[in-house]
Length: 212
Image 1 (cartoon, rainbow, N blue to C red):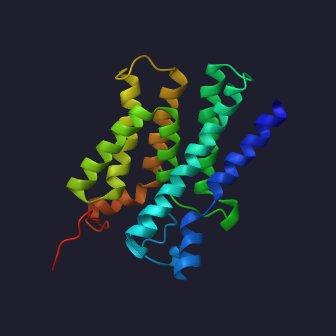
Image 2 (tube, rainbow, N blue to C red):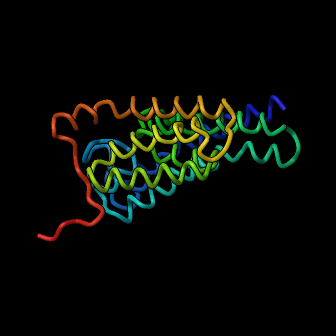
């Protein structure tokens, strides 16, 4: 079992390390996304530089990385190799490794994106209902402010609050604690965005571009 968990841990990190935005931009547009826009190798910058189609593909694949890595623990549970409590713990562990892989990808000099999409995939696998509410919060905040970064941070904070107050029933403490850790991580990786928001220099995005 130790070797199985070790192997799945490595696989989770490698899944997260897949540099979707970089590979897609290079192979289909001849552009290294890290040299354009904000320089971030993530879905938001891909939307901004390469458009909706490219951004949607990168967003989906980056979220899928987190979802699949988190779901690896469910395979062990399905084959009755672990109990449910251990399954939840391993879901958190594998999902977190995928996020680390996205932040520090081995395939591109350990310089990746901010992990929001991969985190989204992870929380969808961990707690679909809370994740969907968080997505709705993101859309509202983004729709009002036009700041993807602000929407991401607020949504990440809402997720553990929903679990803390038992909106969907009693939750496993480990999941709640990790929810707060993820919120901290998202806010931390967006610390420069916070500065730019207060300075009024943060890039805005629009779901429906205004016609000139």
